[in-house]
Image (cartoon, rainbow, N blue to C red; front, side, top):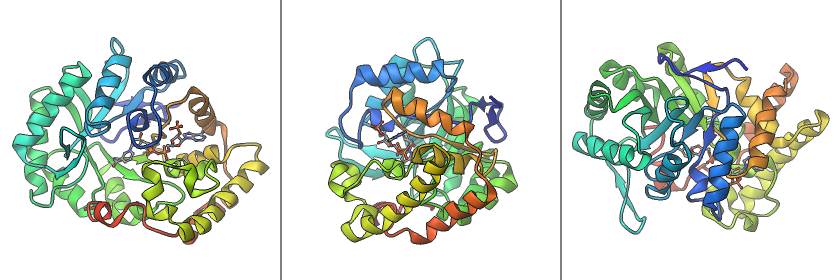
Length: 324
Ligand SMILES: NC(=O)c1ccc[n+]([C@@H]2O[C@H](COP(=O)([O-])OP(=O)(O)OC[C@H]3O[C@@H](n4cnc5c(N)ncnc54)[C@H](OP(=O)(O)O)[C@@H]3O)[C@@H](O)[C@H]2O)c1
């Protein structure tokens, strides 16, 4: 399997990574034993790019990866993120991009992961109070100190990426990208390509919705239940998108999840999707997306589905912190 290079770095990864957020929080019940065995299965199947953040489960997710990947760091690429600050009860305290916080957050992540160096360190959300140059300056210091190998940003507009890049090369921008979330194509993909920065596509399965597994809103029963796209009227309309994907999937003897991933994989070698799952069954299914070849006609049919999307991808508060 041809690996995909992450931007200007010397990191070459399997074309599909694994997002581990749901193993700690947001998407229903969690089971540590099951999660660890899924991570081990991922490695067995060739996956070598793991995505976490300090805020997932308020540190739990990094600890979980530290445990699951012990002895395997160095052979895999580990990405984590900072800036979303949480309190001792998990409450969200805001975004912090201050240089002194960058250093503190990195040290805490290294400790939880049980490693000396993070392969790819992302600024998760942009702090409107701190110029990007200052935050990235502090991140660059971490590279100099050997605590971080490469830098990434998440939810940034092209202009912010350019300002950041002028301070230190950025290897990847992590953006929500899927059949039903394409605002990033306008917001930063042109600049990513000009600078040779990879796009890491998060929530590539539309947080599970694009797999067709939710027939009614109540099926989500977790964080997703409160997302605008799940509001009654919006959900009914968005289900039409899923039905179209399922139709194409049926004609190819595939699953909707595989079509959703194949669509992203077809959008460029510089894009690496990181679908999230806690289960081996889904992991195996998702990797089979690599075997699917979509025709130009199928891609353009899937492209058009974006016009049908109803509702923002986050609530108003969170939307205000995206693509900054
Ligand atoms: N930078 C950011 O701001 C940001 C934001 C969100 C996420 N992320 C990262 O991106 C990763 C992936 O995104 P995501 O987890 O939000 O969304 P996603 O990958 O679009 O969807 C995950 C959901 O889909 C389900 N699923 C996965 N494969 C499936 C299959 N083959 N059939 C049916 N259901 C399937 C999972 O179920 P199970 O849970 O039951 O396995 C989970 O509920 C995260 O883990 C995280 O690392 C980053």
